[in-house]
Amino acid sequence: MTLYGEKSPPADDRPTVQVTAVTWPDDGPAAGPAPVPGEPEGGPRRPGRMRMLLAAGVTGGVFAAVAGAGAWAYAGDVPRGTSVLGTELGGRSRADADRELRAELERRAAALAKPLTVTVDGRTAEINPADVGLAVDVPATVAAAAEADAHPVSRLVGSRTVEPVVTVDAGRLDDALRKVLGDQAQGMTMPAISYQGTTPKVVQPKPGLALDPQRSAEVVRAAWLAGNPVTVPLVESHPATTPEELDKLVTELAKPAVAAPVTLRTDKGSVKVPPAAIAKSLRFTADKTGKLTPSVDVKRLRAALGDDLNAIEVPAKDATVTIAGGRPTITEGRSGQQLDTATLGTELLAVLPKSEGREVTGELKPTPPELTAEKLTSLGIKERVSTFTTRFTGGLASSRSQNIATIAKDVDGTVVLPGKTFSLNGHTGERGYAQGYRDAPVILNGKLVPGVGGGTSQFTTTLFNATYYAGLEDVEHKPHSYWFDRYPAVIESTIFWPDLDFKFRNNTDHGVLIDTSYTSSTITVSIWSTKIYDSVKTEYGPRRNITTPKLIHLEPGPSCIATNGINGFTQDAFRVIKKGGAVVKREKFTWRYDAEPRYVCGPKPS
Image (cartoon, rainbow, N blue to C red; front, side, top):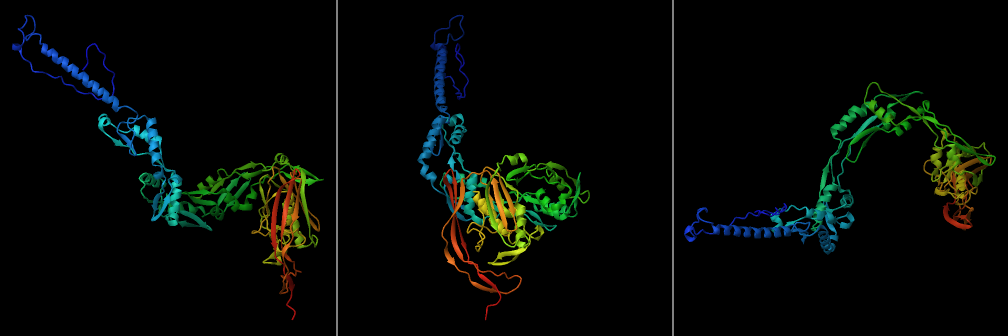
């Protein structure tokens, strides 16, 4: 009802109450005064006016009641009657609701921290909620409570329960569940295509049963607050590449790819890529979903082509440093030309399915040297830091001496950058006849026998000592089984391709140059860099556990090498490094030498 002379109230969302005026019985004309001439029939009808006033009074009272109820129902951010975890949050502001919910969680802290019993594929274990990030997200829960669907009447007399928002770290939960599962899961069999020679070999995809991280998170979140044990389901998963798609890859790519060579043309000439090289470089890789994707591994392709690329490529040459007149001298390197592999793999992959037109065009691009004169100059290779010499017999005419000279020439001039590790096997590669090495005595299964590369251990010992006295970091070395007096005890190293290696790390901020030289009776290795230590010396402990050699008679012949025998012993050696007048490092090296038998080529005397 709108009263004349008053403004309409502002619109709001409070409910509208329909009010009907109350009418009292009318006594009629007999009960009232006589009609007055000029007035409507029935007279002024005062009782009717009274009804109007009563109706107006009743309506105003109802509006006041409704307005009060609406204000009560809509107080706060959270609708009246809304609860979370049994705690009434209705009628509260978000801040108050947040505090109340946190208080309830604090009261339940002990229960919520209890381990949750989980079962996966019949195996049961307990998981600590905190370890997998199980928690109630209070702000998100309060927001959900504030947005709860509550119509006007429900706000006055209704109630509703809002489930708390539970969070969990799906990745950490998945890791924990995998530990419970162990090796019970039946993983997918991923599709695969590989080559045996040039024949494609296929592995068909098969589905498996595995954990689904999101599904696991759902069931664990639902069970946690109730404190109930939970069974986490395994989900069947299928590889993305189907058997039909795999067969199509074999028919349309894997088989035709190796049916004929591909011609690689450049401005400098052409190279044939044979089927064997294609088979070694064509890869079919499955991702974690089992999707199989073909690609050409250009590094494998280059390795498979080997020296054939020399017909079109010119290798870059690094700047070098040599020692002349007792000083380092730097010579600038030169750029080369190398096949641009950025798009080669994609272009080659495009022609492999074809039976004709198997041809790709390669581009040669300039390749600067890895080590320029400018960079080499900045490395601080300016002075000799250490040097070490060992002696050998037989002159340079002997096979053993020739092997020492060959490996020394191969290593001479090598620059090891700061932080890098030098591997002697990695630098020289296999040391066989093709590389210029000869047969000479080597220790094999505890005795000296002829073997290719004999003598390279003497160079290894010399190099090891040079790096040792330069204070460089020892990464890998192994002393000989027997001690030879041409080497320092303990501080020596053997080498054997490919099983035994010598490695050191340049643990300085400067470059390291390995400088080698030899005479008819000596091999010398010097390390050039920037000197950072005052001195590097060795302190020996006494020899102990001394053993004497046995006498062993061998069948005479070319493979028999007689020896006088050497005592065995154990000894400690300490590398003592000083800087600024103080010891900054003291490293212990210990080795146990066997007694070398005295081998005699001939039968025992009768």
